[in-house]
Image (cartoon, rainbow, N blue to C red; front, side, top):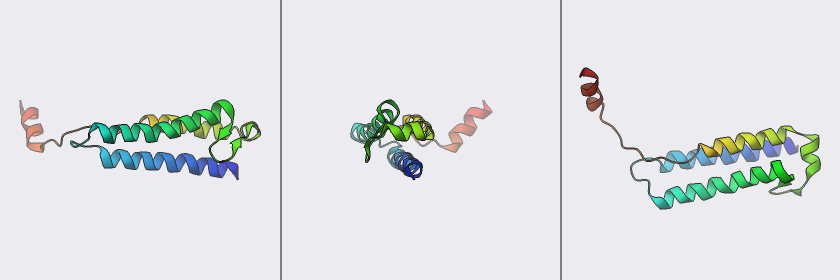
Length: 106
């Protein structure tokens, strides 16, 4: 059951981080939105690192027996660290397709 809850925690965190990335990315990205996403992703990354390094779970406390009994939890946490690393919003400007065609014709 702990494997299910760990997977649910990682998937929920990653899904919400990518939802924030999709919502905040664009030409109107500012420092406040970016820092909010950094702090949000940082909370989850620190939680995953504590699970891997110390066996400390956000809602269960220090339970190293979970990590020993179910090593897949460490892999879920590792995947979560990587996924949250790529979940930061980016600033981009919508391009015009006609500009792209003109550049291709040159």
